[in-house]
Image (cartoon, rainbow, N blue to C red):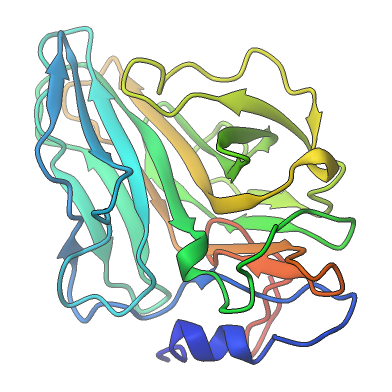
Length: 275
């Protein structure tokens, strides 16, 4: 069933109370057929290729896509030789919910790694979420059932606060077909500073010592993903996310934010079940 437009979903939760409200809910029926991500041109450094859509141009499909705009930076690399183009980058149509899918399939390399950062900017949050967004004890995050291929893959929550990216200490289980990522209290979750550039994209935070309650002026939310395949030339390396939801507190402080459906679930409600 097709979801209501994002601005209507957001408006329905714009209530002045101390309870979390959904500001971004990515997940539903956004494409009739699979639509390629708007990757642009890659930059190449050795065995590494990077596609950067962190500026004004969105990573989300440029046409035939009805969901909120999302942005990001994606990278693939291999120790076997120069990185080839990523062969699977789409919003994939699915009866159970469309997915943001990034994968590397058309290569004979036995070592394939794909990783990156995907996020929604504050301009796509609810209209009243234009002030300083923060986390409190009612804020939660969920990335519902990320699937993929490879020897291992996982996702972490990501937030941009005061111009600095942070990744969550919590990640989805480092195994295939994991149950997903759930953070019930984003304020007590510990976060680590992260640099989202081509040179540092694969370098995870050295420590996770920043509490979510201290993060202020959150202007983007999303997820970091990683997948690798070793020891098999015919295997794929990919990650697909179908639901992202976030919950946080926008200004004024009496209102709470819930964001991104599929990757992060912040008090996200479905018609038949709550995730």
